Every structure is written in C-alpha cells, then in structure tokens.
Image (tube, rainbow, N blue to C red; front, side, top):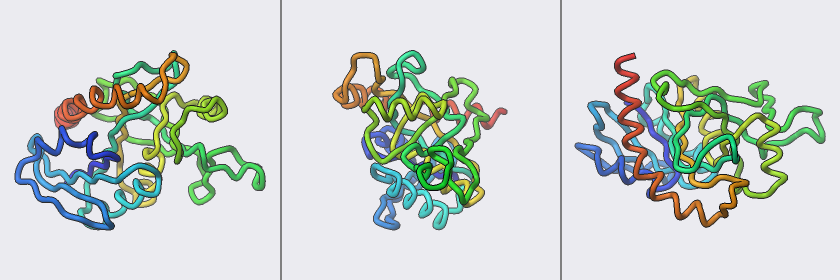
Length: 221
C-alpha cells in the first residue's frame, strides 16, 4: 500500500478518477480513496490546507493503512530565477519556516528540538526525471518580502503549506516519504496570488502523469 497525501480535492481529481476498485472512507474527518493505480495499491488522503490538516491526514493514513511509503504532491509557489511556473520538482529537503524559537533558545529559524534539525529529507529514488529543489512550509500563503527572505535564508526555493509537516510526521513514524510539487506562482516574476488560481488547473492536470512516471521509474530502478 502506498499513501498519497494531497491538500486539495482539485489537486487529486485527476488521480482519483483513474483509481480502479475505488472505495471512499473517512478517518479523522478526512476523505480517503482506496484502490489501485498503475498496478499499485494506493490510498489517497485529501488533507485540507495547512500543516495541522496535513499532519492529521498523514497520521491517519499511517495508522489505518500501514503504507510502505508516503507521497505528498500538490501545488507550490517558488522564487524567481530558481523555479519556473508550471514545472514540477522533487523536494530534496523540507523545513517549516514559521517554526521559530530563535528569540528564546538561540537556535536557527525552523529548528525543531525533538529532532535536532531544521530539515527533514525526502527520498528521491525514482524521481531522477525531476529537478530537485528544497521546500519551506508555513501556515500562510507566502507572498510578503520578509517571508521570501526567510525562505531564501534557509536555502529553499519552493514554498507551500503542507510538505514540511508531512515530512515531520513521516520522520516521527520512520516511514519513507517523497514530496513532489508543481509551481503555480513565482515570487518576483510580476505574478500575484491570482496566478495561483490561473495556473492551478494546469498544474493539477499533470500530476497523475508525473505519478505514473514515478511508479514506472521506481519499479525499474
């Protein structure tokens, strides 16, 4: 069984429509779609937006389905010159840039004491066809200059609202995980939050194809 965590139903529809022998279940208030995709047993969780929602869905998937590994895919923003709109990237490290105890503990922004790290590291085998970028997560739509500066200071060029939390939950459960992001908006390119809505459908249309290629590459690796 492979667990797939996706924030928005819109991001998941292309995949869900291609799942055979499909069943819909509910755990922790989240919808889970169980069935087969490209010869693999999969469970797709629609988490909702944000870190807490993502963590709830990921832990529920682990507790109820014992997946071999977890995939998080979904839309992300990015930084001009580092990523391109409507392109897909595999995350090679993840952090949570809104987790900040630096004022009291003299630690780096994003440092999580329980794990003695700022970063969590996704697997990347089978994703050689995608360029690698680092992902910063927060519980807000990243647009302000101060947030962009923090993201860049952490060596990241992608940002979202779920990936870093999913990475932490998977690490806590000692389960391998993968993070795949499609870029909807690029900060500094003259786009605005409106670009997110304009490009979301285009990015979502390609996710099941990326996943299909990943399964094929991983099987033959």
